[in-house]
Figure 1 (cartoon, helix red, strand yellow):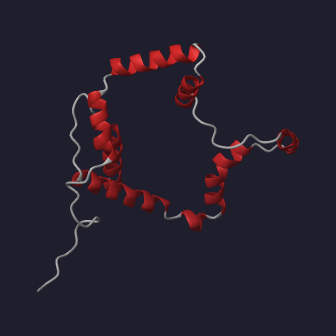
Figure 2 (cartoon, helix red, strand yellow; figure 1 turned 90 degrees about the vertical axis):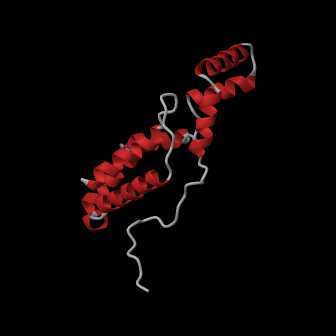
Figure 3 (tube, helix red, strand yellow; figure 1 turned 30 degrees about the vertical axis):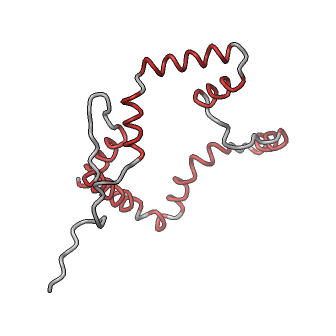
Length: 151
């Protein structure tokens, strides 16, 4: 008996797999924008009235939670005196590394193409119902990535 040639990257079928997007779709179908506006308006009124929990909830959605501890004043002064900006250093690291060590980054384009192929195949296996109310923005990014990989 001859072996079949594998043409798919992902083995098996995932037709019955429930995903986070399925649950999010059900939530979006149930809670209308008007309902959500009422919830936010009520929370805003409670926060203005002194409800600390309402203020915290609004703050988390509006400005987010702090991800790290703030640097000490001494650290900030030393960085300023040395002309160091941690944000610029973090943003420029990949570009600097690829310029200094091109051999380590020569496969970056290949990795992106393979990820796009996997995303395209997964998108085909797990069909998401798209409606006007539920346009599925997460899947749209996978579609465009797959198109770029095949070009």
